[in-house]
Image (cartoon, rainbow, N blue to C red; front, top):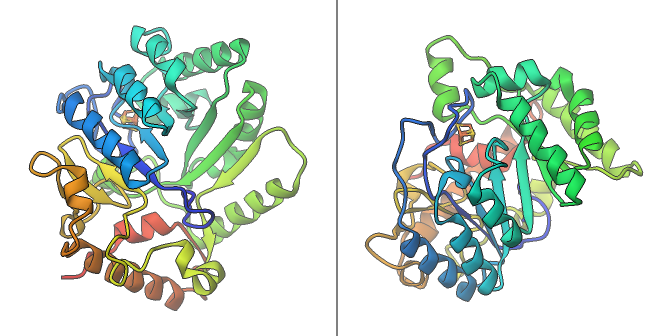
Length: 337
Ligand code: SF4
């Protein structure tokens, strides 16, 4: 399943090995930053990656924190490749001269760099005067060396007017894909909003519709750059619920997709930081295989109820909000008791 909930269902595991980051962006949903040192052990993550491959996961994606600050990232990527997994790394693009970057690149199938808009906006969101310069250097180097990479943009009310700049930047940089991800008001973005100092606010339903139409138009155009927006129309949710979630309660072997390993070792279905009532368990206490092959696990039933209730809520609101981001909707709602 792709990141807007619709599409083919390749099984994805997201690994957040650390909350350490050299930046402290205003939209960071994991509250990462230089002051955080909490990381997970490489041996626990290696075992989980091998077991994920045995369970049938096909993609492992590393994000963070800044994954290129995790010393054992190259070894984890190598384990993933040896296990037959497609690998992806999401980075802020500021570490392209580091030893970890150099050693990781040969094992990365999909490298994704985040961009927040033109230089002034990017540096303001990243809270760093040099963030854009470092990102631009990374994409230049990748382009010159003929490496394939994608760009991801966290879309908000303030950045929507820069969509043409983003499109041109991604095209000129030689990116294969520009992914537009509507901002999730969680983590640091929520904290700033709660304190009345939000630098980025969520798109309203009209703007979401414009994003959806823009992505549809780009999909039909003959361009070297693919554009993907993490939004879906409720008609798809109504007619094809199986594209959005498995029948967890009926199929006792169903696996969460995506599955998320947080830096604490907590195993979350669907998205980082989702309501703890939906957690699949703790890798510090039980192995991934053990947790996923537990027929009696109650998280499947709770997850199915949560998905069904979220689907109903979205369909009820369809007249006012026909376009939505499935994972944001799941994260925003409280889990069933
Ligand atoms: S959004 Fe990414 S780059 Fe920014 S603080 Fe969070 S982990 Fe670091």
